[in-house]
Image (cartoon, rainbow, N blue to C red):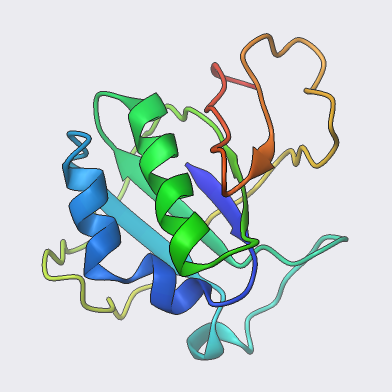
Length: 144
């Protein structure tokens, strides 16, 4: 799961080229939650720069996924910043799947419990790195 900040994220993250690049890494599924005009009236909490998108990718090689996302954003949304985590998923209510890249008319409820925005990794995280889209953030171990 990646948090993404920057300009031009909607076009960059919904581009067929991103889906193709992620598929080449063995990714099985992609979900992009954009903070765009469709959700402009939603209530948001927090401080600092608003998160522009949450990108979730399911697949066997998270490091390759992080690299593909960073490479794609480096050319399609220069200056975008990412932060990524390995996430253990638990599904309670399975939403209807859409496979064609079209926008789904559903609510995505995502909570970011901890944000890491400094140059030093969070305490206890031995595999965390942070960078701009030019060099991907390596997803951390659980809880990082």
